[in-house]
Every structure is written in C-alpha cells, then in structure tokens.
Image (cartoon, rainbow, N blue to C red; front, side):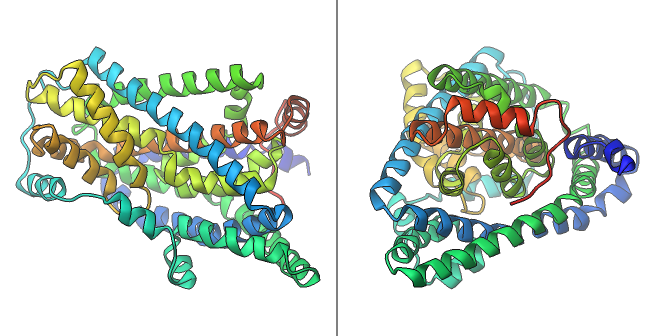
Length: 426
C-alpha cells in the first residue's frame, strides 16, 4: 500500500514518458523510428474501447431521458456554443498570424511528391449535402466497424428513445448497457496503465522521423500556432467562467492527463475515454457527457479551424500576396462552413486548406511546405480540440441546470484537490 502511494500520478507518468521519448528519439533516431508499432498498438487499444463505451453510455443516458425534446435542446445549445467557439478560434488564428508574420522570409523548396499531393487536394471538395446524408447510417454494423461516431450517435438517439418506451423489456437493455459501460471503464483503466509506454514510443518516433532540422525554418509558424492556441484556450476558459461563474481553470487541471495524452499521441480518440471519466468526476451527468463529447468531435474542432485560418494566411505571406481585411473575413466565413465536415474524413483538413487557398488564388503548393511539420501542428490542434469539447460539455450541463456551482466545486475538491490523479472507475 505504501509503495502504491509513492508512485507518481498518471499525468506525471505521461509527462515523464513524453520527455524521455523526445530525448530518446533525438539521441537514438534509428531505434526511435522502429518504435512506431508500439505507439500505434496503444492507440488501437484505446480505439477498441470507444465504440462499446460510447454506445452503451449513450443508451443509458438517452433511455433515462426518453425525450427527443431534451435531446434537441441539448443538441441546439451545444451547436450554438460550437459555432461561437470556432468563430473565435478562426479570428484568433488570423489575428496572431497577422501579428507574427511567420511566412515572411520563408524560402523552402517543395518536393515534387508534396507539390503533387497539394495540387490534388486543391481539386477535391467536401460536399455538405453528402456530409449531412452521411450522418444517417444504412447499416449500423458497418458504422460500428468504421467507428463512425455521428452515425452511431444518430442511431443511438432513436434506439435509446425506443428503449425508454417499451417498458420492463427496456429496463433489461439499460441494465445490459450499464454492465457493458462498467466493463469498458475497467478496460480503460487497464489500457491507461500502458499510456506512459505508448506516449514514449509515439514521441520517440515523431522526433526521430522529423528531426530538429525540419523544425528550424518553420519554427516561427509552430510558435505562432502554439501562441494562438494558448490565447484561444485562455479566452475560451475565461469566457466560460464569466458566463457560468464556474472556475473552468479547475476543468483544465482535472483534464491534465487527457490533454497530455492528446498532445503526445496527436489523437483525440486516445483522450476520449479518460476525458469523459474526468468530466463525470467533476459532476457532469453521464447522459450529457456521452452526448456532447462525441458530437463535439465532429462539430467543434476548435484547434483544426484555428490551424486552417493560420495556414491560409501563412501561405499568402510566403508568396507575398496581400489579403485585405474583407478577404480575410471572407476566408473566415468560408472556413466556418467547410471545416464543419472534416472530422472522420481522411486528410480532410489538408483538403480544406488546399481548396480554400485555391479559391482565393493562393498557390496550393504552399500547403506542401507545412507537410514536414504537420505532425507537430497536429499535436497542438488535437489538444485544442479536446480542450474545447470538454469546456463545451461542462457549459451545456450548466445551461441545462444539470450541473450547479455547488456540485461542481464539491466534486472538484473531493476528486482533484490536493490528490494524485483519481483512478478510472465507473
């Protein structure tokens, strides 16, 4: 018992894994490049948890509500906040890049392969009509197999309300889902014990594969995006605190493991189970966590939208093409619409940036310049995405009167204040 107490918390272990992985990848690059399967294995273990966890907890929450009106109200409030947050993210991205001018003076040759990839992406587009229709599954088993969160949520909403209206037989289904959820949270705990090893491998691979030399010419862009992301999170958290009178900086502290995990793996999915668990430990009801979080992963990509606006302006600066205030506002409007459907579409972020650049007569080849550092930028924007979704979930719970200031403060003190990282449990 005494030896367990002396062990560092999970967030400390992940941070140690991140630092050691970076050092290992730098000093032993050849070995570091071989560690990718270890990191990928950890990510796959996390992904295997997500579908049964999300579906079972969604059914529990929705069947308990049994009310499409409440679901509609939840969704409406979430979408309003998502839109406000992504608009602010776009604006901050443009403001910071205008101020820091990271593209001025950059002179990097673009490889033929990267240029061809950028040109191909510029001619693709993401149809919003097709995206909306795609939300409706034709085969729920296929949606489960592909981990298509929006299709799973869509089906779960109808299925959960149906379960709520079939009486005692429905109670058996809810009981089964509760048992599945409990089992999956246990499995999550087991997998998270491997997080420091997975983080070590992922960071070692990243540093050894891309190296420091690649970062130096575009270091100003990385620092600019990082600055914009930090500013956005501060603005977001401060605004949410003022609106609700809750201390959202406590939310960030409670989510430190999830944020470290999302940063080091560049995977929102890797952080989802532990982020959901921490939100519940803050007093947010399970039905709101399981509805708003997966929905936010498709509609509230704050980090991705900020990255898109920053990259477009960066390309313009590289080629010395001035963009007026009106043009930049038009870019904001274009990205507000086009970035809504990028989740779950392979390479969609790259496609959106390349297509938007072409639409505003910017050379699509400019997008290829950032390919070498995209992994680093992905780590930053993924962390921002996770943070934005967690803030939105707490905010919606407060708006629904399902989370009070007293409950929030009591839960924070009991689970997070002056304590090591709480264990994952159901």
